[in-house]
Image 1 (cartoon, helix red, strand yellow):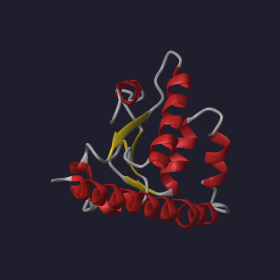
Image 2 (cartoon, one colour; image 1 turned 45 degrees about the vertical axis):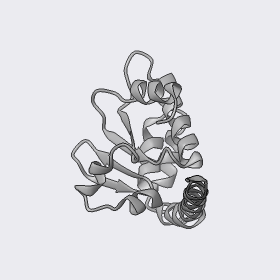
Image 3 (cartoon, rainbow, N blue to C red; image 1 turned 90 degrees about the vertical axis):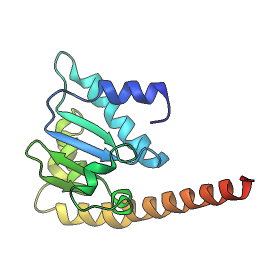
Length: 153
């Protein structure tokens, strides 16, 4: 994480007992903005008790993925999460799990996770969100690396 505000957000948004731990790419501005919005909502909605959501940045927790056979590039491609039993969730299933926990989003979780709409939600996430954001983020990272290489003596 890049700033003190983000460090504080990650710490306050991580309950001691989580039902879902979401793994996201904080180096991607789009991913970071989305997850920070959900983190803020989780903190604001928790009141006296924390919501059962945890947050992990893939840039600081690479071992989490290695033990599941997921490369860093694959982790950048889509959201991953782990439930309390250690089962891995991918893509739209992560979004649905987040939505099901957050007040104001629960109806979206029920809708997108329903058997009738889940295939459409999967398609929308994979084709219209995940792939374009991944390509943009990867290309952005390559441009930054090239710029740094040119600037190095």
